[in-house]
Amino acid sequence: MPNTSSNITQEETIVEMETIQLGIIGMGDMGKLYARTLSAAGWKNVNVCDMPNKYEALCEEFAGTGIRVMKDGHLVSRQSDWILYSVPAEFIDSVVATYGPSTKIGAIVAGQTSVKAPEIAAFEKHLPEDVYIITCHSMHGPTVSSKGQPLVIINHRGAAETLALVERILSCFESEIAHLSYKEHDRITADTQAVTHMAFLSMGTTWKHQDNFPWFDPTYTGGIENVKVNMTMRILSNKWHVYAGLAILNPSAKAQVKQYSLSVAALFKLMIQEKEAEFVARIRAAGEFVFGNRGDREQILLSDNLLDQYSLGSVPKDKRKPNSHLSLLAMVDCWYQLKMNPYSHMVCQTPLFRFWLGISEYLFLNEDFLQDAMQAALYEKEIREDDMEFMMSARGWQECIALGNMEGYRVRFEDTAQFFKSRFGEAAVIGKQMIEMITRKTNPSTTDPEEPTTTAAP
Image (cartoon, rainbow, N blue to C red; front, side, top):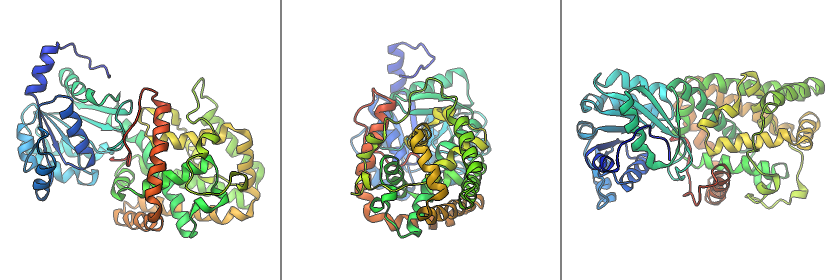
């Protein structure tokens, strides 16, 4: 349980949970998770709402739970002492503009968006000056167990006693509390979410353009490849707008996404010219920067053999063909070029980021794997075609994000997802097993997490 920095008695806690009113505006998957968790923990007054056309359905869904469904955010805002806006980042300004002026005097206001700069701007613009702003972000999807997962609290405009109350309210999630500023949050999540998602999406788009289901391809056989394939399927089976908002609305994401695209292109140009000395020197320098100062850290993943069991295909491991792992080499080069230590970002880690850092770590800390990847990158002409498509895909996603093109992002995302749609069901089962494995390894006390969805809502 997190430290709540307060010493209230058990009797005071009971009174608090019976009298303080909690409000949630926006009843998507994360809003529902928060409502149910708070209510189950003993908070007696949980007020929720969504769009007016969802009122009847929500009343039916939450009948008999003790959760009070209200017709709109004005009613929630007027009555609640703590208010959580659980709406997509792209809509946060308009929703807060509508309901923010009704906020109860002295209330604490939070948001659950994955990008805090537009959220804080909306709060400062539309909320009365006599309310507190202490926002948060659960770094997991709505069906992942919150126990042991990071939960960021941002005290933007609050007093010590209001911060302590927020910690008591959120303690029922049993998450690992991290205190950050909203700028620190966005800078770190640009790496742990936006760039990570872009790399997986670029692989998916590559396979779609190649008309290739990777689980039938010997180039994509083995433990590392299973992470790439299953996590790509996991992202593509979810809602496009979550990932678009993370990338396009985060001020820190564009620079990092651009550098990843530049790293892919720079390495690919060295590969096709077979400039071995320059290519190897660049990879070695990047690897030393990122992994050379790990200290006594335990490796994130266990072994290639562990990951081998999570396969969508049936290609025998002994039939595996060389792979350049350009996506991973470029990510480590990106971190190096930005002088960014990904291990310092574990405070905002997600299961997807743990996998991404984990397979990068495994590649670079296994000298035989790394040598094979570099030799394949430089001299295996058979995979050059895929690497060229990957470079083009990464640049396409980067340009879409740089332009802030939500519609373009949607079209690219849904077009890629449609190609793989027939395998989403099977991939969801395997993805669940993989998330359970990495969650147990990171948080040994965590058992039997529910089937997760996107980490981005994010």
